[in-house]
Length: 220
Image (cartoon, rainbow, N blue to C red):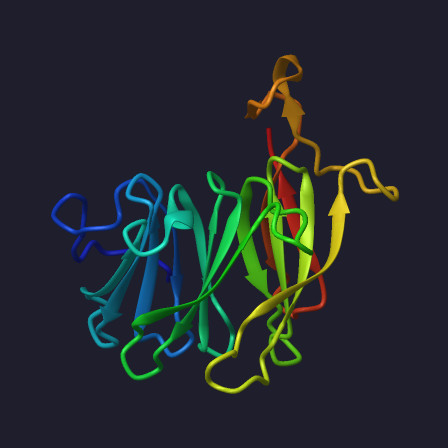
């Protein structure tokens, strides 16, 4: 039980958009797979054959379309399959796409970046998760550079043009209000941030299967 059997592979440069593949996400209907290519600054969408699991290219979004995709680091699909969310550590951004339920293709809806008015905690945005219960009304983003976890409201009940848009609500940050374990280290007091052994970094976030707890991993 659980044994894996090799079927096929796709790789760069034969397949565009997946150089430096860093994360993947499967849609809830099982029909689409999304992959971030950090080196390509891209998110690639693939059709998935439900019977065989094999993939075929469907759509590609990259820095030609959206500059904030440079260094794309993580991708997730909302529980209602309406949206795809991509983070970029390099540009400290979250890119929001509407997902076509018929074929899985993507349409840009929103870009949020650190420094935008009313937005905080996206410095080195490394991962994002949408709450699995209560309609997916919240999204959480880890900020590796800012040692932070940012909470956003997600507009799950909006009309077709606005569904899935994010609005900043709250910031949890290392050393503030009793928060610990999200720290990142700045070397020599400069602007360069790196992982340092023994110094944890807010790097990934996920919900427990019952949707009641949020777990943030920190690793140095």
